[in-house]
Structure formats: structure tokens, C-alpha cells
Length: 393
Ligand code: LCS
Image 1 (tube, protein in one colour):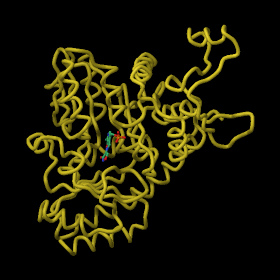
Image 2 (cartoon, protein in one colour):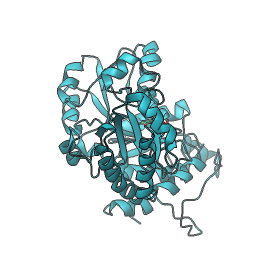
Image 3 (tube, helix red, strand yellow):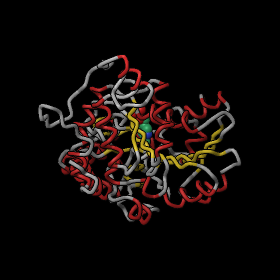
Image 4 (spheres, protein in one colour):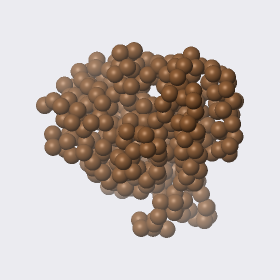
């Protein structure tokens, strides 16, 4: 069906779907590396770009195409490019948009490896980067140089839950001839559509909310305009960081319930955040749905919900955090997020371990910060588990 005017949850079920000759209700897995042609002339036409047939799965595949059409529809983009992981999405974006001598300005508290690859690898190819606190858009303006090509933000940021004003930063980026790239992993398209606020490119680690079942690593990049889309697709094909058809099928299966999973998880997350905020052993809580979040109003402006990610610290710091993590049983002590299960982790020693102590401090990734990803278990069980853990602190 044509889902152009449909609601979000209808798009989750029907956007991008394939109607095959058997009337299959789900998108079939075209588990093939290559596609045959009717004739030599057909093959030549296809490779010359004069016809739309499939040629080779690294270039395009019907199962992967279905997922790309769907996510592009959910993010209101021109087109999407599926890749093997969220990090493949970040590096494909970097490679597509930056050349030797260029400069990128980015949020300091982003997913650690997305910063690490820039500072330790891309620097070898003459690409410079500056990491700043983007919660104040004026800092972005100040950091832009004549050779800045890209402004790259994560909002809410991993793991500080700091937010960046999408519209304000898009305006500044464009005034200076830069593109705005947004890592929208923490929200998923259900809660936030950065392209609608002026971003040029959005990407996701689909390992998280979009797939939602902690059984696949995957990424996707969505471009607002055709030219950018083609540039990114071309880079993906050449780098060979394509998605596999089976991986695409798994994500297509997971994404159908994105709306109901997030509705439930964020309803519980608010209760968990309130519980933590009122707990005598808790020093601070950062959750977009709490009025105490310094950017509560900004969240209401650009997000359709508060999400299910919480960061908090205990009065007893890292020592207390270790005790808590060792004494919860329902919450898995594990990195990642956005799945149906509740997870707890310590960014300073885990996801962001390779960020230098100085940069961590500057980015607000304090030693006491505990990151908590609320799942869809019964909220009473989640809170009982936290209570049990906190009793041992
Ligand atoms: N962007 C964000 C915001 C992420 O949280 C992650 C992974 C990535 C990109 C990279 O995606 P991947 O290649 O893993 O699919 N974040 C992780 C985290 O916070 N814990 O474990 C992985």
C-alpha cells in the first residue's frame, strides 16, 4: 500500500513492503550474492544504469531495499543506505562527506568509538576534528573554521543525556556552508526526526531501538537530498560495508514493534527515573522526562517522547556504582541499549573507556555516571531489582 500519508505505526508495518507473486505477508529473504540477466544486452543496460534490475548484493538487494525504503520513510528522507553496523554508518558518513584538509565539529559526549576513529584514524589522512559541548549552539559557531565541512551531533548524547538544539545548530551549520549530521540512535525515528529540523544526514545504530531485540548489529544512513544519498550509497558500495539480506530481514522483523516497544519502555523509564531521583543514595539523575533535566523544554520541542535511557550517579561514586552493578539481577550488566531487556553499564570503564580521562571530564562522562537502559519487563520488577541493588550500596 502507499503509506505516504499514513501514521507512524502503519508505516512500521507497511512502508517499503514487497508484493511478490505468492502474496507473502512479510518481506522475503533474498539470500543471494548475485542476480542473473535475461541477456547480455540486459546485463549491459543494468550496469550502465539504464535499467533498474539487481546485479550484486553489495550494490543492492530486494530485502535490503525494502528496509531502506521503510527507514527513509520513517525519517522523512530522500533515501537510506543500510550498512553492516552503526560504526559502519558513522565511518561511511565521514568518508563520504570529508576530504583531506577538512575539519569536523562534533558533540564531545558522543559514542566513544565514533570519536576515537576520527581522532586516531581519520587524523592520519589529514582530517581535523574539534569536540565541544553543543548544548550551547554558540559553541558550534565559535568552533567552525574556514575548512569545516561537517557539524556532527548526537542528541540526547551517549551517555550524558545532554541535548542539542537541532534547529539552532542546523541554521549555524548552513550559514557556514557546513552539512549537519545527526546520530539519532538514542531516539529512533519514533521519537525524533532530525531532517525535519534542518539536518542533512541522519544515521542510526539499528543494533539498538530499530531492531530492538539484541540479536543483530546493523546501521543505516538517511539523506535528505538525492545528491547526498547517491554520494553515500556510492561510498558504501566501494567500501563494501553493506548489510546482509538475512540481517535486513531480522531488522524488518524487529522494527514492526518499534512504536509499542518504545511506548512501554519510556512509560517505565519515567517511573524508574522518578524512583531514582527520590532515592537517598542517588546524587543526581539525568532523564529528558524529568523537570530537573536542564534541557527539559528543548526535549519537549524536538522529541515526541522522552525515551528509555537514563544516566545517574550515586553519592558513593564509582565504588557505589560497582556495588550496584554487581547486585542487580534483572538488569543485565552489559553495553548496548534499545533492546527489550533492561541493561546497566558504566561508560567511563566500558563504552567510553578509550576516551582520555581529560576528554571524559570535559565531556561530562564522570566516573560516577551509571547508564541505565530501561527494557519492557514489568516496571515493578525493574524497580525492585534496582532497590535490591541499592540496598547493598
Ligand atoms: N551511535 C551510538 C549513539 C551508539 O550508541 C552506538 C553503539 C553506535 C553509534 C555504534 O553502533 P554499532 O556499530 O555498535 O551498531 N553504542 C553502544 C553502546 O552504547 N554500548 O554498546 C554499543
